[in-house]
Image (cartoon, rainbow, N blue to C red; front, side):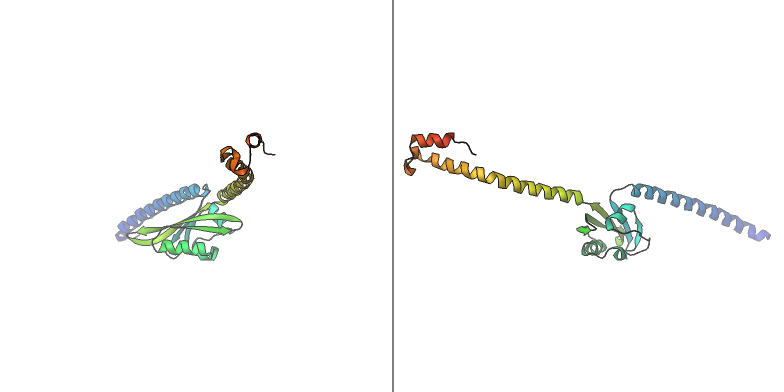
Amino acid sequence: VYEELTPLLRRIAVQNREIHRQMAELKRRKEEFDTITSNMQEGLLVMDGEGDILSYNAAAKTLLGVDAVTEGENIFSLNRSAAVRRSVEGALAGEHREERLEANGRICQIFANPVFREEEIAGMILVLLDATEKEEREQLRREFTANVSHELKTPLTSISGFAEIMKKRHGAACGYGKNSQKRFITRRSG
């Protein structure tokens, strides 16, 4: 061993230990991030400025209807729909975008946000929410309202007609007497 190299070897050993420590810390943080995002019901995709996927969770795969996602793969290789395209393009233009995506019998709401680094767009985050149940409930509410409205129309029309007749003073204009008025007032619908 050359004595001249001893200080250099010590520095290399110190730097090597520091690199291993930093790598262990990065690995711990990534595992923590993966644990948090894997327990989310919402789909999460983190992408660079080219639309290449840096990170994702299992819910994103499910909501997009894909079996596998490879880090570094472009978002458009997973889904080429107009909603995804508008979301990505909007985020890359620095805008917050919200879109509706229908895929695999599911309805998803997409929220796209740009990620800035020193006032430049460094990437984007897409959050996918499963809105299928919400849409189904809204459809049921509309159907229920339409049915109730239809079912109430006939009795309300009858009531309105009887009210018009009773409104005429003593029924003179229609040729009805007091006995007819009493019959209309006490009549029950069928």
